[in-house]
Image 1 (cartoon, rainbow, N blue to C red):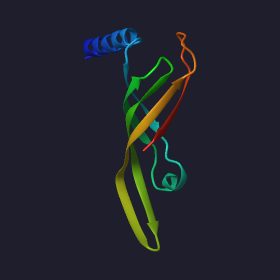
Image 2: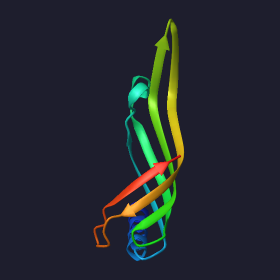
Image 3: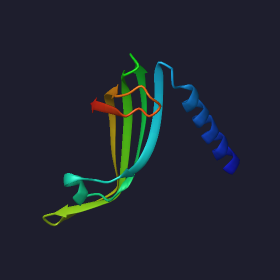
Length: 116
């Protein structure tokens, strides 16, 4: 298991290093999903993950798609004598993404906008 994990990390790092001048970018990640607003009263925290693919039109401008999925567990609520228990609340989104890179140096801060 440990060897497989190190191999996977090596492959991802090698692809990231070699993909700096390519027209296509592929990214993925994950984190903690913290419910906000009305959902905060119904669900506790969970996990979040995303997968995106963008095309570089210029060295500073890219656009593409992003799939985002959040799963929050332990949701329960009740109103006027009724009680509803949900084992998991899942939110999926497919988003159109635009990215503007502010510099062309090794460290590339960017601004992104998504809609979907």
